[in-house]
Length: 149
Image (tube, rainbow, N blue to C red; front, side, top):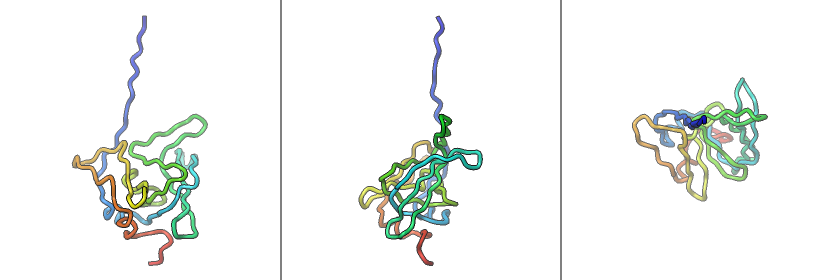
């Protein structure tokens, strides 16, 4: 009799813990909006999840490129990458259209609170950044797409 032992490997990304002010410094833009579309694309030799946001208070949309996704049965999982779902509201710190510091830079908005998920992230100092932040605090941080400086 032959027994096979299957194990599940979990990848983890080690990162410095960043508060919203630090994320703003490291970002070239922020977006705040409703996820209206999520699709997977093959670009630059990688699979990406592209979330299109209808920006709140602006007559614009923006694409957020998140590493990972599945196309035709081929899947790429990136440790520490955030996730989004159509219909939800998010606030994202961006660096070249990608969430700054992966999951640390994408907040899921629930009423007046913004939440972030740290799945797949381990922090250098062992301290996690705050998982919940008042939305009003995020909205005061620069830079922001569509805002004139």
